[in-house]
Image 1: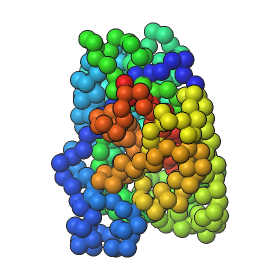
Image 2: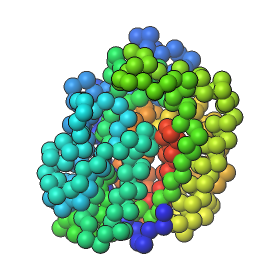
Image 3: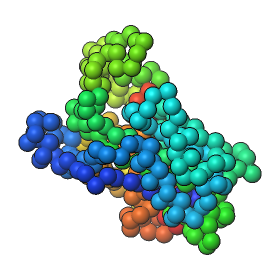
Length: 347
């Protein structure tokens, strides 16, 4: 997606105080030591008391305060999640909008699995480019992975799940977000490509049931992935994913006016999956396209559901990983499958 002009981003992430270290998880029998080494995480944030929409509200308040934007000026509140949000047959996005005072915004929920936060930023950018009267858009994500429905260490291969929320305010650069406040980052381009032929990875041999959790009492993505591998083989996934990853990286860099070896491109940020999964599926096609330093920001957070890319934007915004004028490419993917890359620079 080529932008008419760079968009302003203010990005924050909220993490609970509770944590489970990998040593504690191994000692408790939550994960085998060999699997823990392959994942490469040091700890996972754990929210026992705060529900995901309330986590999103906390992150949203932070983003609004930092940007100086007024909640009543928001045109969209886009909320993405992977797991249960705290109630059934109910709209978490409307709850978040009400809690932050975004009374004029249209709340929209996104079910894009682990790429939901990234797609939210793309939809926000499209709204701002397509409607000159639209106010800023807020993209939130929040997920919490608790038993008995989700085993944060063992419900899936290649990742462990941490509890977190993110908020990214998307606005026009130089727009009236607040009294003289500069944005954290400038968004220069986005690219998204899908691989719908991979949706079966999260469905396996299962039929479509009539009630939630009808296939098993705990979400078990390992079971569906085993069925996928038996039917299609690992190489089918790796080749398909590599094709889409190279495609989104090339497209995002070109739309931002950068080459893969451009000295302005400081980092190429990868998703917050396990180290082995990153080495096998994401890093090879990424490094085919760019020589930028690969940056892994997820060792102390785990995979944060729909918010990996957005959490990495928050890290880029709130630290000195980037200097003013330097760029980063942030890559993400989510079940379905959909892959997104964005290019940002530090203000």
